[in-house]
Amino acid sequence: MRFMALIIVVLCLVSTAGPASAEWFVDVYGGQSFTDKNDVTVHNSARLGIYREVEFDRSLTYGGRFGRYFDAVPFLGLGIDFFKFSPRIGPQQFHIDGCVPSGGCGGGQGGTGSIDVDTWALSLDLLLRLPLLKTEAAPWGAIQPYVTGGLPLFNTTVTPRNTSQFRNQDGDTDRSFGYKFGGGIAFHVARNLMFFGEYRFTPSEAHVELHDSATLRAAPVRMDLDTHSALIGLSARW
Image (tube, rainbow, N blue to C red):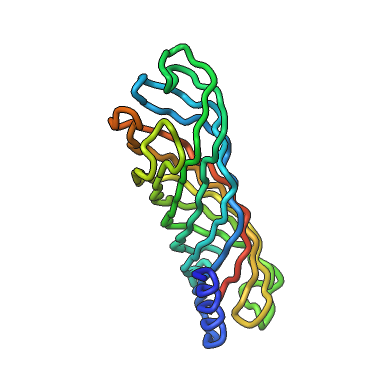
């Protein structure tokens, strides 16, 4: 519903926009995100354990971006981007180096139940575009390949849902800065409206304190969220 509301806002902007020398833009988009397998470090009641090659579920990702391309250098722009994704950890088995939850520090096989991972991010972006096939209807180019980079602030909440190691429904939130790199291509489809496809890579990390289910003591957890996203969207230009 939120994504549909954003699309309606963009269409309203398109219908009311008039010609202008500068180019502002509002984008709405959605797609799939894929988070790489990564090691998860847990300081549990048995001391340090490293969970090797933990898998994250695919996730819906969506968001919106607002900004402007500069008058003097119309190939260069700045934007503010807000996006969300949820790379949940599903029930699985993996190898543990170090201390295992059942006791002993010689490593071995282990596993976990489901753990929710919910992330939103706010990023200041730099955009570079190549305006191609300029026409009267599309003075900035009917086709626009572009690249983008940013420094997002990530807000990540980790909540155990069905685990024997951690206290369930008792999560924690971490905020940290990461990076964003991406590129795509936009096509002029109507007056003041473009359709685009974009790939982006957003490496980030989360440090949270969960609680051991047996002792209820804090159990610091660290995970890397190296996420690839494939997106499509609409862009209002005026």
